[in-house]
Length: 315
Ligand code: ADP
Ligand code: MG
Image: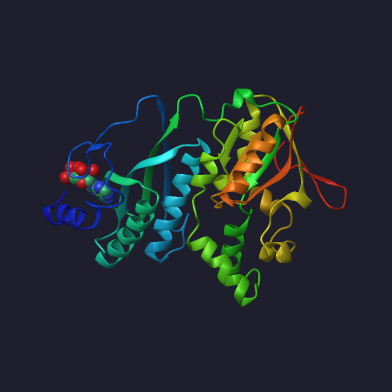
């Protein structure tokens, strides 16, 4: 890497995030040296956002920072991990200092408030692309264990479903949303909040959990596959924003909240014996979680629609 590029890294990325005592060596060395706490499992997740695929061409750098951070932390949250360390692999066509400044300032704010430290990365020339690796800790044995998943477990989601996709449809003028609702939707798309506290609340209670970023139905089907179970969902229980509820038909109907990508919320399963404890934890947090159905003994995902028919987004 050219010396000027090294000084760019030093300028924009050397001091991002919290200063953590468990970081022995951070940015500037060949490898970071990190000290995981004893008695904990290390959770590791990665997420890549590519221009034109995961964010629009010419998206503001703050959008890329917010969505990249929320994406990777939503995966870590599904392991009920407390986030600690982050690395960043950045490729960009040419050095764009204004972009780097805005991106690094936003990433700094996000990582500081989550007590996460940026401990390394790589910077290369190429199409605009951001890869974030996040590392966090879970007390040994407290992460969800899908082998514990049973028919009858309740299925929950945090937040609302389908809003990221709806925001994209509104950008393309495929749906028209009144100004105030549109502002809320854009804010939710540009500055999604990673479900860190929600993930921590699942410890010791959830039998399974995943980020709905790749779509609710596909994540659920992957989770249930291992135990040969299925899911019975109710469309009228799916948490929708007012903007989506009012535009559901034009936005693609019930398939949209079931399959849309890009929402950084969690879906999780809870055995009936833990349901009350779990709902208490969420109400203590003032965080939303909504029961959308139950694990069933026959494979596949069935969603009961308001008209009494069924939709099977994944068999
Ligand atoms: P070189 O390519 O010359 O070997 P490196 O890629 O190793 O240089 O980068 C030097 C230091 O800067 C390393 O500690 C690396 O982790 C860090 N680094 C490089 N790019 C980034 C980045 N985008 N974000 C955070 N740290 C980075
Ligand atoms: Mg390098």
